[in-house]
Length: 71
Image 1: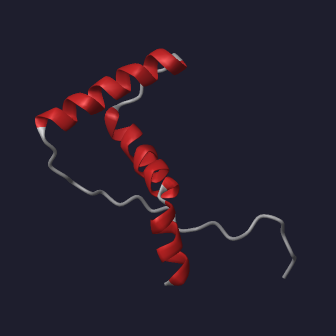
Image 2: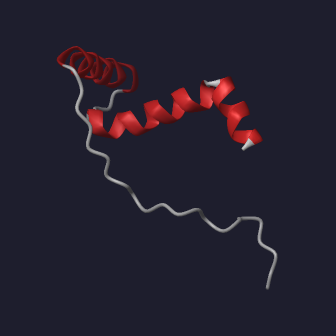
């Protein structure tokens, strides 16, 4: 088998995760989406922003990262 620089891609099958949020959180997400559009000149639906927001949050949590390394 040839040695490629690009490793095998991970599973990218989307998983739908329905959640219920409070009205206050919904408003904050709407406000964030509006600020995002103003900053980048492109509107994105909240549902498209949430996965990136969660990823950024989890990647910035050092305790979480350390616990995953130990597991």
